Image (cartoon, rainbow, N blue to C red):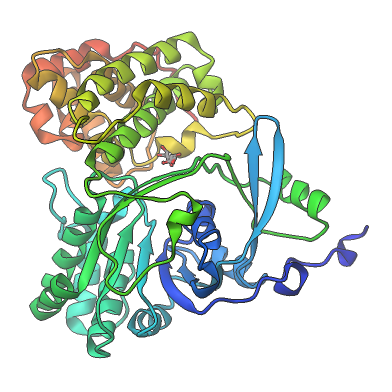
Length: 468
Ligand code: CS2
């Protein structure tokens, strides 16, 4: 078949009627599509819940998706083969710079839920847990909002602007559902959003406090970047052209905690779980899955590996992961009881199998980004808990040491990239302390911990330059 004969994916091909927009999403990327869009599609009442999804910095994903009416193919990539299914829950794909459209949709009374996948770093939370109003992009948005001239450029600035429109329209309460890998992600989103609103308009911050429910979630589905080969595989298997398929593992998990004052889809039909206390579940996921990911990202690349599956096949990396899991598990066990059984041995075994799925080429370089923010969630709580209990926390310290070694290889993609480079111009203990302080100042104040981390540097034999 020649390219001209192959139809482009569209709603008439797959009989996917459009649901009305009731969910607005910020951060139209592969993960949103493999996760929240998929859960919404599989909710029993999914036909009533359409998503309008906005991109972040660039319009590309929205342009590509809009050309196929929001539709995309989800390729579930299991060890044994691929399966293909069209997801139709995104009914509008919009360039994030179209803040007017965002405000109109957020202000519409039918909109009940706003979901976010804007990256951990985008919450602008400094190592002190507060919104860093001096960060250049945050400061620029605050100035724009205050002057009333121009439109904000950060996702949070845009959201605050849109929530002001909802208040003005008296459209009532709704839920903001944070789907980024942060501990207490609902309250982080709450602080970041009201912190931004307060600096602009204290009344708006009060309205947000009274009308917006911030739902915490733990999200999980390994979703590597789509490649040209994936696009070709979809065309060969499905007989249509889809420029934007998403590849994901078969596994998916979503734990949520919080209120939905204007309703929500019946996501539990698709396996979502609603709990009163989310902390044990979010820590299990952040420490065991994401912690191992970050450890593999730095140790693995220092050892010359490219993907998660390759790194895990290296006994030195595997041993480091197991040691970190042992430390994390000890602290997770303290959160069990009272109806909470984290089933940690089964969870660990499942993770090994998921990471070993060699048909998923999950690139370590993708995971390595934004290390200063990610380690704050993934390594720091474990090392602090270990040390508070009188143990060394050496396995969590090794993750931090591996990051330190990794940053030597060249400029890193990180919200603190400038500070990382400046710290790396120092030498000896001072350099170690400065880098650790970017992740967590309290840890940098623990001289014994800094010494421990320093001693672990070089464990994975850094190469002269690490490709990015
Ligand atoms: C990864 C996550 O890139 C990263 O930091 O650890 O994206 C991870 O793949 C997902 O959280 C899996 O659910």
